[in-house]
Every structure is written in structure tokens, then in C-alpha cells.
Length: 555
Ligand code: GLC
Ligand code: CA
Image 1: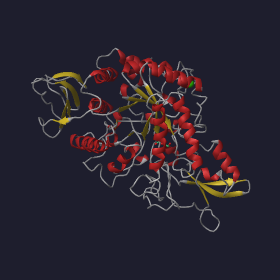
Image 2: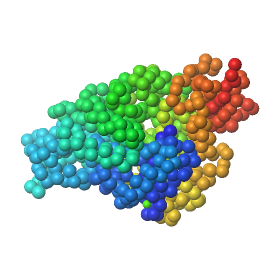
Image 3: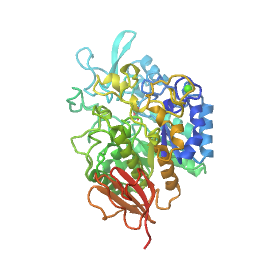
Image 4: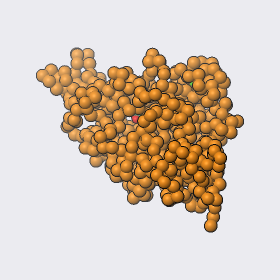
């Protein structure tokens, strides 16, 4: 089980309102007690924070607001001492406009080797005042920004995300070499693996062909569709095989395995599976569970298609309910529409992954959402393969939907012209203790995003002794998962004991998982004993929106 830390919002040890590495070190025992066996740390590199650290100026250092390289080393050592492996974010698609290589490229001018590190192109129109093509950015607006040099406007550069995030040119061997050094730098320091940001977007098709117009924006479609000129280009394979060789070199030196996890939205699933072919990456996120609606048929189809596809390549399936890019699971499941319907072919073809979908303006019932999120957590943790938990999921935190616009920082909010509220609502600093802000995040400094009053009852300290709390549920489930021979990797078998709206599967030896989404209570299988339940049984029956883990009678 991998726990995602978003450093800015995790714990603020020096009380300046921003989370830091020292805060992460202080919470290592909390993570160990939770039952985590690996952490993934979102970017901690020096950054102007135009995109929460996903705009990197130096890939081999730590942002001063987060601490020092010595702190990072101490974190890795401390994690290892507690049996936790450490994955960090690698952001290879783009840098920061403040990265020295980009500053050099701006200064060096058109046609220079410095500009070849990025995607610079001449504009169109008689005076070059129109972008090189029609591409739109994933954060809204055009994907090209015009350079204004000492003698006026000149070339344009490409940014899939914010203009502060110029894209690296991955067909240039100098870019490959630069990242080889970065990868070795962290592997040499003992980091166990890399979560590769935008892993399917690194290479752009030659000639930058236009994409069809997105009616929402009037610009070329930015999100994935098969054949899109910046997603899943064939050259990715060589890059991934090359990285894999670097990682495998460490195992040969008896320094332990180094792994790569892709962040990729490539569809269909068969195409995504190529990323985890032998000799390529170890695992890839698949976000199907995150986008899937809370409905038995959709969930079962989503689970089956993932297990079947991953089995064909022998890679473990990953399960994700949330991350720093989407509405928190409690709130998603508290809405009248809880996600997308799934079939064995996936979500409906007309549906595209868009940042605008991260915030859906619908009424929310967080109590219902939390009940379902607890049930979903037990489902996620019972499935074969690694599960990811985004910080605060274990506390049952809802999305903070009513952040004042003045407090928002996500560039996707500013660039999308109000079509999306952006991702700040899932990044509000965690409540650790106390009943008033900053709720133990720091000592008294106000955090970089305001925390809501409901944080008082949801703090870790408020939940730790409470048998019914979400934190207690996670601890219990992770303790069972850590020792139960049927859990972790392996297979599952669907039971046919229940009709449509109940998911029921077994895993050997002697484990059953029952997820009731039927709207009415159901009986336990005969002879089964409850090991963990996401909500209390009622008259010995499993109520709706509830998952139970079972020990099955041996026959
Ligand atoms: C990934 C990150 C997201 C970031 C984007 C650009 O999707 O998860 O937070 O904004 O890449 O780096
Ligand atoms: Ca701090």
C-alpha cells in the first residue's frame, strides 16, 4: 500500500504555513502505525510553485520552503528504518520557466542548441503573431506562449500545462542525458522508485499537427484520444526501456530494486498495458477506479477489465481512489452522480478525461459520501495489487468546496476562465490535532490554504481512540492486509451467491469481501465471520453502502 504525501499540505514543522520535509519526518511513526509500506512524495524540488511544485527549477535539490537535501536524506533513512519504501515524483515532461536551461534557451535565440532543449517554433500569420498550431493547454488557453525578447516578440514555446511549465524536447539526446543524471542522483541517495509525471506525454509528433477543435475551448483538444499528437507517441518505448536499464543496474549492484510507476491516461487499456510490457515500466496507475461510478455493475466491469488486462502482461494492477488532482472521494461519492459508468470496454467513448471534470458543481451529502468512501476503501484494499491512498483519505476528509476564490492557487482555476474551480479543494493542509486552525498542521501559523471548521472533528488526534472513526477503519484494514495470506497480490474469484447489486468475491485462503450497494440489507454468507466492516451490521445483516471482510468457513 502506497501513501501519497503532498508535501505542501502534509505537516508544517517550522510553522511557516507550508508543509515541509521535517514535518514528514515527524510523521513517519504515524505512517508506520497506519500500516503503510511505501510512500510517494509529490515534488519537493526547488520551484516557483506556479503548479504546486510540478514546475521544477532544479531536479537535484529540495525547495527551501520544504527544507534541505539533508532533510530529504534523513526522511529516506527514517522511512527505510520503519520498513517503508520511498517513491518520489519525477517531472520529465516540463520544467519551470525559471529552470536555468530554459533561461539559457530564451537568451540564446532561435536555432540555438539551447532552444533545442525545449519546443520553440515560429508563429504563423504574416508577422508570426499567431501560435504555431491550434493546440490548447490542459490548463486552458493556448499551449503556446510567445517569447518577448529584447527586440520585441519572436518565437513561441510549447507548454502542455501552464505557461510557467515549458515542455522538454525528448527527441533531443541532451534532454535524455540530463534526466539520466537526475534519476541516478536520487537512486544513488536511496530512493526506491519514481512516479513518472505525465509519463505518456513526453514526445510530441513531428511537425506539430493540429488537433480537432474542442467545442468547450475553441482550441485543439488537449486531452487524450487515440492518435493525439502528444499522447502516447511510439518513441516513449525507447525512453522507458532506457530508464528501466538504469533502474535494473541498481539491483545488480545489490542496492535493491528500483521501480518506476507511470502516471498515464492512455486509453484503451490495451494501449496502456504496453507501458508495463517486459523491460518497460514496473507499474502504471490506472485511474479507472477513481473515475468509476459507485454502482455494482460498473465496479465489477472496471475490476474485471483491469485484472484481465494486467494479467496478460504479468504486471500488478494498481488501484487509486484519489490524488492531489481530483475531488476527494468522500465528496465525489456524496454527489448525485458519483462517476462514470463502466463496461468491460471502459467508460463511454464520448467521455474524455478533462481537468474541468475535477470539480463538478452538484449538491453534496458528505455523510453519505463518507459512508461509501469507507466501503470503497475496504473494496480497494481487498483487491489484488498495490493500492494508493492520498493523504487525508484515511481521515475521511471531504473536498473543501467553498474555498474563497481569493485563496485559490491552482493555475487550472485561473486559466480555465471559471469552467473549473481547480484542485485546491483536495490540497487543504491536513488536520492533525486541536479544535481550531491550523489544527496541528503547524503550531499557530495559518496554512497556505484555509482549513474548514469540520477539520476539528476529523483530525488524526480526534479519530485515533475512536473505534468507529475512518482512521481506525484504515488502521484495522491495513493491519489485516499486512498479515492475511489471502491479501496483497494474487487472484480473486467472484461468488455467485448474490444478485446484481452486491459485489462478492473470495480470495484464497478463506477470505471473502462483500460490498453491498443494493439499497437494502443483505445476509452474510453462511458460516462467515466478519473481520472488518466499513459500517456496523444491522440485526446481523449488511446494510447498504457497506463493505465487510469475512473469514469463510472451511469445508
Ligand atoms: C500531473 C500532476 C499534476 C500536474 C500535472 C502537470 O498530472 O499530477 O498535479 O499539475 O501533471 O505537471
Ligand atoms: Ca514549513
